[in-house]
Length: 292
Image (cartoon, rainbow, N blue to C red):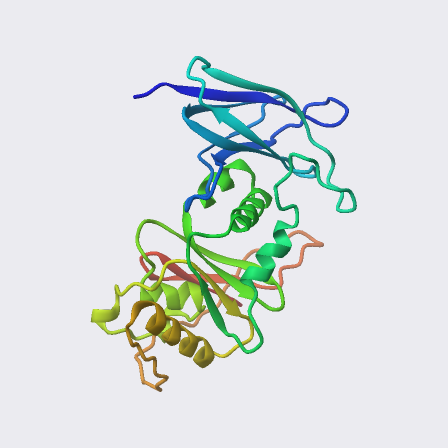
């Protein structure tokens, strides 16, 4: 293996106090199809160390902490005589939408508006596909969402997602994410993109594993199932040169009806239980829940 270097430093607030659990991660600087973090670390008593970074690249170091402005720095990693690059102290300014961004901030401090403008649906548009390579603002959005959901672990979890299903109601909202090396197939797309329950689908065996185009999907909230299916048919026809037609039919199916009573000891005074959740397994990886 070739030698690699370590990027380290300290993250402080404006008064010089350590910022605990600040997330630091490096990504490739430039126009690459892959814009996810190369490596990441979390501060421990203000100090961080991101290890095993290959030489010969220019990296973007991003430093984020809840309640503070993000800092981004360019790191040159061409000097092979250096085993460690110490960036010293980095002080984060408190978040303040009214104040101008720091010089080291993202080249596009208005990235959220740029993301929303690209991922929005036009009047009368039901479904839209955005294919990779994704805009840089998409990475900013996903990383922000991942950090809000739990910190550094979520950053590394969401880094490998190749597709996302967003929702549009006048603004873009996060939905399901899809990861892995394979394209999502028709069944999974109907489930997690269009939100059609698996028990409402009957897909011929020869179509079970037919893939749909890779990319991000934006679905309009409140539109009918028929509108969503028609829009998906058109995208598959345009992008994959394949005609698929979905039909709505009324069919009779055997069903299992389960009835019963649920009794439990009384809870202490002052605690009121208004519902009971019943969970049944209908598939090796799917649970169906009902609130009673």
